[in-house]
Length: 74
Image (cartoon, rainbow, N blue to C red; front, side, top):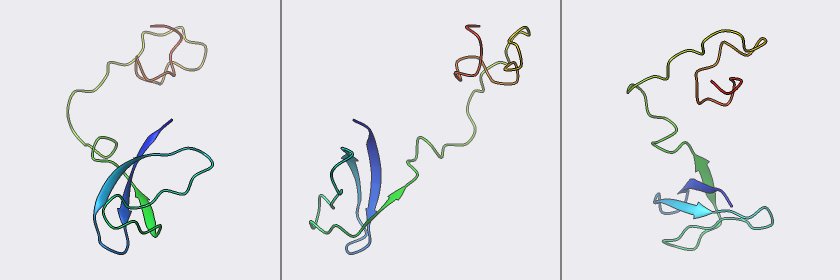
């Protein structure tokens, strides 16, 4: 089950919530169901080390970075 960050539109608090496909997330602080999914700080992080480009021969997928899931096992 994925964990997403949501910001409550009622109280403004941010919560990390485990979401099942059949449930509507609610604020952990006030219980409101008026929440909006936001980009987590991890997903929105800029800078830091970048993965090296793939070493050719990936049959059209060589533009992805190694470890990105776009390579053919490099």
